[in-house]
Amino acid sequence: MKKIFIKDINANSNVCDYFLVKRKELCKAKNDKYYLAVKLCDRSGDIDARIWERAKEIDSIFGKGDIIKIIRGAPSVYQKRVQISIGELIKVKPSEVDMADYIESSELPVD
Image (cartoon, rainbow, N blue to C red; front, side, top):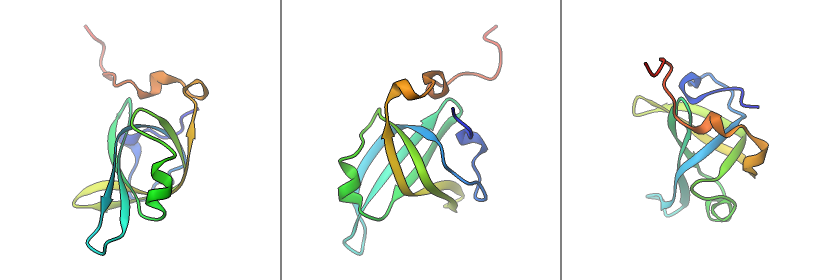
């Protein structure tokens, strides 16, 4: 069961939860080390995330459209936006989560 939604994450949050991968890209930093640039989402919005360690190895674990569980995630503010630095994650089956948590919806009635 989802415990924290993206709209509620701030630099002081403890991030250990499930997210849908909206985008994933293997990038090369100025120091020639690889990292993963990831866009995560849930029904409340999206957030940027980075994987700095073992990026090439972790790249094969999950892809766009997968659900992942962040085991260790450290939010911080970068360029005035909250971003998560992912230390550890696992890929999970869609049957393990409520997919309604990942479909954007309005907080207001449709009427």
